[in-house]
Image (cartoon, rainbow, N blue to C red; front, side):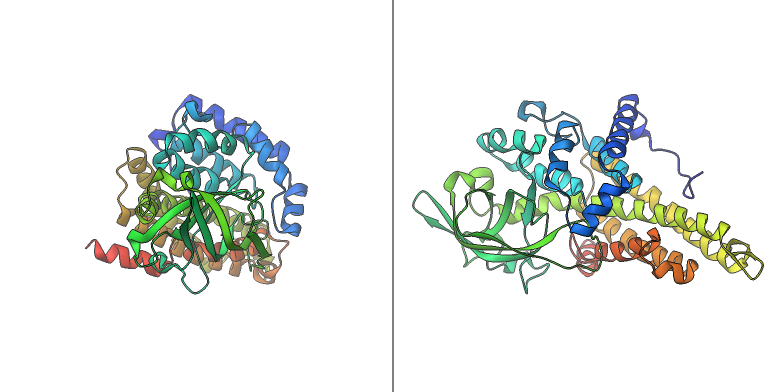
Length: 387
């Protein structure tokens, strides 16, 4: 019995969803066994061929309309891919980034030509995506980026540098956030579509050495007069990039909250197994009243978090999730995740500091959730503005 025993929400009680979840789970069991995932962790990235396998199995672009090569599903199908990935311990595979962050930019904002050109390849895994937002010294202040995409004949020349880019080593399709008008802030930003193969002046920097998420590659990217044709401005019009980014952030932040919620549940379940089997002073660690009180407190707050996240998902399915509510979910659940994982690690004693134990990796991996997708300090600013 799971520690957080919240009934499945009504929107997930669908036979087709259940069948899909079973198929996705079996895919991960067959194609991402523990030995293969360990290799990814050691190499610092998921092998490129796995993306093709996932595409062939129907795990990519599940909510992309069928007319563009997708599977015609909805956000619930995307949730299944992410949820089953977490349950099977498939580290490093950036399906949530590819499916629920990047592809929606094309689906909702792309021109008809852009959709037809790129979406089918992104669904099959022929193209793997990334989005290049963050720059050295800029962080969450996207309006202050210095990367430019200036007109040159029948296209644009991109110049600048990006850092902390997820999928940076693997991606061959990158949405580059750049200034087409350096004299403007928000109104000067455009999203440029770049296929990296044969792109002169494009260079991948070093794979960054992180304290966690070992199997997920994160990189620096450099652009030196990289040419993209005029038709590669997302949506076909300059100056819309910042507003396109803001329009997709609620879903991105909900995804982070969902991932944090899954992390909380995994940490609690892992720790319950440990404290009920590990003995100290002639009894199990679970027999100590302190253990019971702490775990009871964590369960109570995690249960409330699960109900809140499910409500956010229900609102999002109806396109009713507000920006400030998404920020609340991202902020509160990731903060709770940090506290839960820390206290769960403490119950493991010295074993919690050893990477062979799952709780140690959870501790390292969970730290980033309070930073990416907008730091939690930024989340508080957005929430405050809504009051």
